[in-house]
Image 1 (cartoon, rainbow, N blue to C red):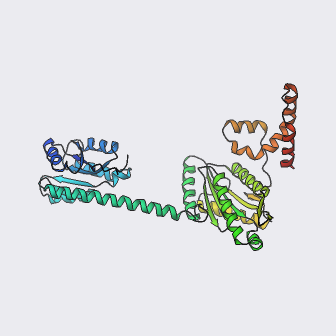
Image 2: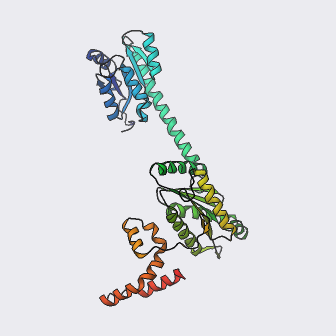
Image 3: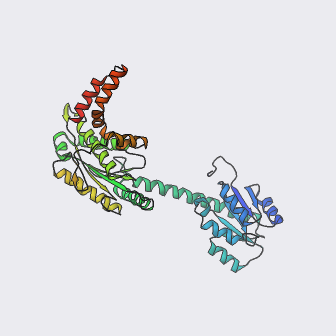
Length: 378
């Protein structure tokens, strides 16, 4: 439940072991507020956990089970943001400066005596509720600004700084669960030459198109950033070196085969990819993981482009799994590791498929499959 915007009265929780005190307070403020009552701090805590619409607490100091100081401390150290920041007014029967100071040290927003006038009590409640609303609005604004700053306006992808923070979180999780994290840095080859030949408009379109394609190609757990004018990076939690390089190879091959035309001319686009992995490369920081992948991407570019380099080697093609291994991966739900090798697997299956087709008279269109396999396997 969240803040009510329908015009309902603000909800106040009154905590006091005296029914008479609670009844008196309710009578004085019931026209302005929706009121809940509890007789001790422990019961009040359970109510705070259960009711997300409470906006302010008025609490006595001395109560059984959990007193006002204990309730206030528990609220201020709560992991729930709305409870941790909720305004609290401590109420006492007399002007006790020591009690007032202790309540302030525990995190009380205000301190009143039971003789405080109704007008003043209502005014203080309204002021605290308005202050809390303003604080929440500021926090929301800060969150929006922070999120906006984390995103590159042109590409809609994360910035490098934000990607590194995401990578640190992924590495922390991997350390706790004995997992690994992979990073890819991808660069569009000959980008300056393409702009020189076709103009900056093409460059802008290619970057936007490639960014959109990347967003649609990764898992929801992955983070994608634009880290340069024509460079991109992906951080993939809980992904091994083999699976990440297979994805990189599939991406490279898909881009090189893509039919791109601009101004009536065919445009040949290729990419260079560097792959790093926290386990294979023994890297334990996000910055170092991205730097290693970037070094390898630059090495692939320097070697002529249209290459994938990972763990010190050029990966022209990943070795396809055996049929048994491929079936095992599929049963485990890891189709991503099998998909790059479909053509090779289909080639090894063709003799069996021909026999099945002849034996059962299926009349399957194996000629089309053979043609596709021949084209993709060279």
